[in-house]
Each structure stands twice: as structure tokens, then as C-alpha cells.
Amino acid sequence: MIELFPFGFPSATRFSLVMLVATLVLHMVFMHYVLAGAAYLAFGRFMGPKRCAVCGWQAILIDWLPFATGLAIAAGVAPLLFVQILYQREFSTANLLLPHRWMAILPVLLVCFSLLFLQKSAWITRRAWFWRIPVAGAAFAGFAFLAFSWTENHLLSLDEAAWPAVYGSGSIRDASAGLLPRLGIWFFAAFTTLAVELAWQGRLLGMQLVQPPQGVAVMGLSAVRRLALTATSGGLGVLACGTAYAWTLPGEAMQAVTGPLGGGWLTAAVAGLAMQLAAWAWVAVQDRFPLPVLLAATAGCLVSLTSGVVLREVVRVSMVDIEALANAHAEAATIGGLSVFLLFTAAIAAAIVWCIRTAARAT
Ligand code: HEM
Image (cartoon, rainbow, N blue to C red; front, top):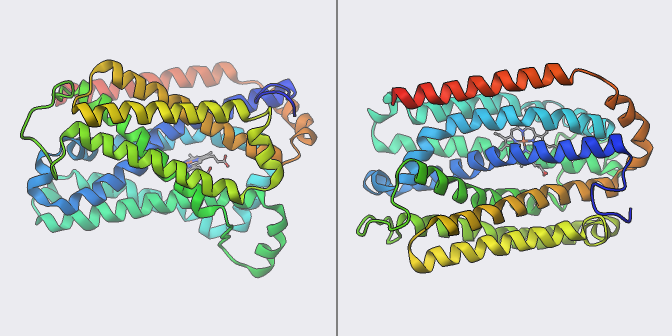
């Protein structure tokens, strides 16, 4: 492939690829909030009641994590559709090879969802502080398991050579070399997205970020410096895990990522990350977070997240014979129902807006 992704593919394949990337970016926006937010709370709860009481970020997360989880789940459905149109054989085979281990994501998701509600319930506020620690820890462990499962399933779907051995051994796990660094990329990237999302939420909820009040610090760090630390550690973690993951990629995948198909996106991903790190360094030094800097961090985050999701697809198309699937993609493109889809999208969007406004009025 000698053209930049997604150009150069037959139109039906290109359409599904673009839709997969666009919908998966949306899933990542919410999923990152949930994964990194659950981790932030799980570790934050160890700081004890006094410090947690002055940490505005933890209060926001307690309030919003259940809602964000609902959005992450809902936003996962559309890419699930496109992934099956594009790579049905690979995706379904991996699902079948990891049978009940893969299906375990459903009960785990239900338990995590319930724990998030328990975390903000009146029941837990009447209990000793200690109980918040295992509840937050279990929710985070569950979401980490879900992220692990999606990564494991994805890598197995691309490793056709491993299928007979996994099937023959009856194993319900597949630990390939890329598993931990790849999972690390998503885990650390989640903190860069979370920091930007919390900054916007704080701003909209009236927190003083432009000139943070003096004397309200947790572990010696103001609210905006805590966000800068969160985002910077995430960004550096992405760089370390991205480098480690690149070593595990086969030659043709590396060529696709650095060549005409993915090279432009790789440059954009690195530039987006650099822009975010520069914005957060400014925040850490100045100890304030004016709107133009927040806009710069947000733009960097969106560019690197979108480019990262595109590069994820570039690797996959280099490992799957996607041209052989062109007829199946063209057939899928003839199936109608767009107007029904748009009608339901509008109805669901209206219902979500109504829920937010009702809850906002009630509080
Ligand atoms: C809230 C818990 C969830 C977490 C933490 C999570 C995490 C992840 C991660 C880390 C990936 C990327 C895997 C990789 O590239 O290595 C991913 C991909 C994906 N997730 Fe989620 N996910 C969650 C829930 C869901 C749900 C409920 C759905 C479906 C309704 C879903 C649909 C997808 C799809 C379709 C992909 C792309 C799969 C592929 O391209 O092979 N996710 N998720």
C-alpha cells in the first residue's frame, strides 16, 4: 500500500475503516476516563479522608464514573459492528478460542458498574473510611481485567499461527510478547486523556484553575499540578510502552507504520503527544491553567488519540489479507438501514441530553 491510510483501499473497505476508527476514538474517549479514573480513585483512596476531602478530582470521579461507564459501553457497540464487518474471521476466531475467559468480560463489567454506584452510595458514606479502599480497588481491578481481555483478544485475532496451538492445548489464555507493552500503551494513554477531561469538567463545574487558590494542596501539589503530573506520567508511559511494543512487531507491520501508509499518522501521534507534554509542563511551572493552554492540551490529546487509533488499524491491515475481503465489504455496504440508524442515534442522543439536564436541575 503506497498511499496514506485510509486512501488506496476499495471504497467499501475505506468506508468501514473510517467508521471503525471514528467510532473507536469515541469509545476510547470514554473508556480512558473510566480506566484511568478508576485507577486514580483506587490509589487516591489510600490518602485517607482528610486529603481526599480536598481533592476535587476524586469528588468529580466518584460522581461521574458510573455515567462515563455507561457512555463507554454504549460507544463500544458501533466499533464492534465495524470490526466484524471488516475482520469477521479473525475477530470471531479469537472470541471462540478464548471461550468463557472472553465471555467473563460481561459479568465483570456488571460487577464493576455496580461497585461504582456503591462508591457514591449513602451506604458507604455511613461506613468507616477503610471500606472505600477495597471497593475502589476492586472496581479498578475489574476495569484493568477488561482492558487486558480486549488487548489479549485483539493480539490473538492477528496471530493466526498461534490458533492451532491455543485450540489444541485447550488454553483459555494467550500471552504473546506484545501483550503487556500494548496494554501499557492504552493504560498510560488513558491518563493523558483523563487529565484533559477532568480539566474541562473542573472548569465547567466552577473550579478555580486559571488562578488556583493558595493553601489547597494535596501532597504539596495544587489541583492543576496534580493534573499535570497525571498527564505527564501517562505521556512518558506511552512513549516507553510504545517503544517496547514496536520491538515486538513483525517487520511488515513496522514497515507499514513507518512507511507511506502510516508514516504521516506516526508523525502526527508524536507531534500531538509533544504538544500535550509542552502544555502540561507550562501548567506545572506556572501553577495555573488558562483556557488557551487547556485548548492546546486538548488539541494535542485529540490528535495523538486519533493517530494512535489509526496506527492500530495500520498494523492490523498489514497483518491481514484485507484485499481478499473486498467483496465481503462491498456486500456489507449494500445493506440498508441508515435512516433507521440515524433516527435511533438522534433519539438516544436526545434521551442522554434529557438525563443530563434532569440530573443537573435536581442537583
Ligand atoms: C468499560 C470497560 C472497557 C474497557 C476498559 C475497554 C478497553 C478496551 C481496550 C484497552 C481496547 C483496545 C485493545 C487493543 O487495541 O489492544 C478496546 C477495544 C475495543 N473495545 Fe473496549 N473496553 C471496555 C468496554 C467495551 C465494551 C462494553 C464494548 C462493546 C460494547 C467494547 C468494544 C470495543 C471494541 C469493538 C474494541 C476494538 C476491538 C478490535 O478492534 O479488535 N469495549 N477496549
